[in-house]
Length: 277
Image: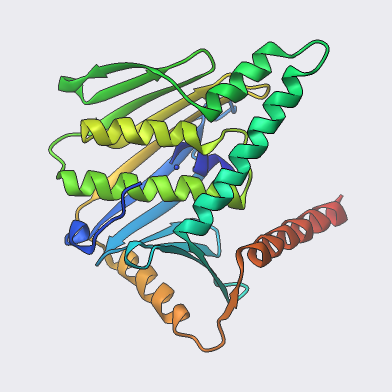
């Protein structure tokens, strides 16, 4: 579920003045290939408040907090009472390493006796994405096309440019973080390219459809509902996050340690499922 959300939801730094107005974005993600495509497979809520961005996924004990003023992202896990702080520079370094590995993988494939050309082209595109662009300004719609990956985006009208920039910068960092935390079939450069086009058009996405012709095709749609204030539930989430951050029992862990915790949790879930068979 977390991987699906990361693929459709994704570097200037945010200044606190860009977020003078609190607002929230509720997201529903749909898998268009399942039997009931109208039923969301994931839901999340993103809260913009006094220079920070709080992001929570329904049914998850994990919350992420983007703190641009400190050049970092905090990952909170309430079940484990742990927090992981990831600096922007660390995240960029990890992605550079992943990019180098992808380049090496492409070279290995090209050196095979019968290179798999389609796979090579797909990987090269993810490394350096290049789309054909169609824009309908009056309808606030943007389409990006390529042989393997396409996006269709519907945007909101009459949105303050600062809010658009704030949301898309958040989406940039979450795209990077989710790829590092949970490796996915699509490299983050693809979604980052879409976000850059949206920034250029000052378009806040309210509907994003992704279609990717991979070995296992992806056909996903995300719907974003924007509210220009924080409701009681949103304020409660922020209060809970800040309270947990002040808890002296909260354990600080590195990114690698947090990844191990996630793997152990997944292993435990699978063990429980095996026991029910």
